[in-house]
Image (tube, rainbow, N blue to C red):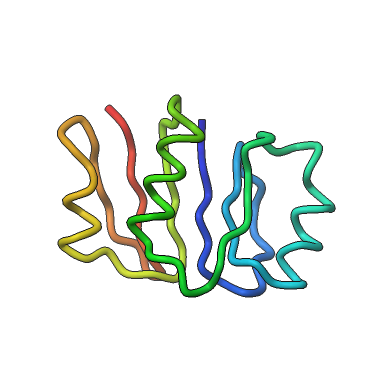
Length: 101
């Protein structure tokens, strides 16, 4: 399962299996338009939410994730520490990707 986590107020990207987006009018519209294609555990979150807290929620709600794409936030040592062995982290131009082995 591919999970997208976007810290953009105006997400307009490709559909993943599940999406976690910042709570905004634009993102609510995107979710509403794509809801039937998303895992029902997809959600919105507050813009001031801690990245590690959001990732913990993703782990809890999507235990079968195989890839997590995080956009608009940089990978820090604290975030990196939240992933254990059996994962590969890759930095991207606007965030990072985590793949489960």
